[in-house]
Length: 495
Image 1 (cartoon, rainbow, N blue to C red):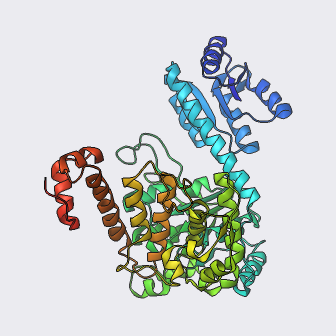
Image 2: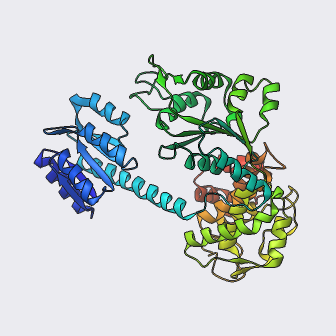
Image 3: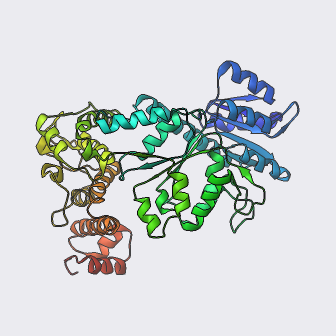
């Protein structure tokens, strides 16, 4: 349901008709007061579209009330071109977007559809989170971690979470937030290693309009978005030194400035940081500030790798198999004793994330409801990690998937390869996770080369070695495919 709030009958009429033509249910109101009255009795809509200036109430006041009561409700504000300052205020108040009057009707419908998609995806995510236990573990190390989270439940102290990649650091951060006095506030996560250095400052602290080229409007940073809640800084060990200085200042005096700003903003945020690196070594190497390390290292929680809590593998695997089955609309698969023994003997260099990917792969790939040891990937059957000397699971799968896109993962009991994007992406993720332990720093290059080689080999097989036709199938130029064949050392047939 979409609600439209505008004192102009013509605007309401036009939007009602346009949305009805798209098959969307719509309800309109002439004033914010009417909308708030309906909100109290009928609950919130999926999307609300509101004018800013109306007799008997302001759209900005309506936005503020809605964001307090229903923070996830997407609100689109309408404003005249001469009132763009109000639009900026609306963004500061948490509006999804704005429409400048007079607006293009098709653009308005597209914007409303995007807001609906966001609303639906967030609702599905919240439902999934509510149905899924936040953390699982019976091993003594995990029970001690749970006790630590419990002891910290009424504290707002800064916490540093350490652990290998894939061990579940964000899950621990979310649990700390959920069981803290700030649980009703937002949880905002940012991976400091995933954002380019020149954009990270603006991402964290926001920027003022005109602060740099392309800054056409004021933008709230992650600190501002997490106001009253928790800010999770993942991979803090990779933060550039100059930003470490700014973060230290925020943690020290509780204030920060937007990029290009001159007015200090008080940070009402709890900071939780995480890293897979040894920060003490980073400090010794001069790559991490020692004073910031001590500021973050007030309470440290270490997440044990999966190989240190093998007794949890069965519990986790059952949970992940059930989740994957639910996502794919299938019956959950079960592990035989032999398959479980192999899983418990495997070191899982990618930790819990690798086990989760593996369970998704088994849900798609295992030919029967009971997963036998022979159904497990080769590296798990061997009880060790993949080596460069043996074919990679994901590379083999991608090559065959690309060469035979019509094959179905469930077509025959002997089928070994998925056909959908999700399936081969899962295989790539599984293989990458297995390599992070032994081939750290080389994974991108190794798997990128395998991926490119697989695509080219599949196209050449389809065209019986004719490069021009293979290049057309792939959507690249002849010179490009020739260069790639040489770079990758492929023994392609001459044309």
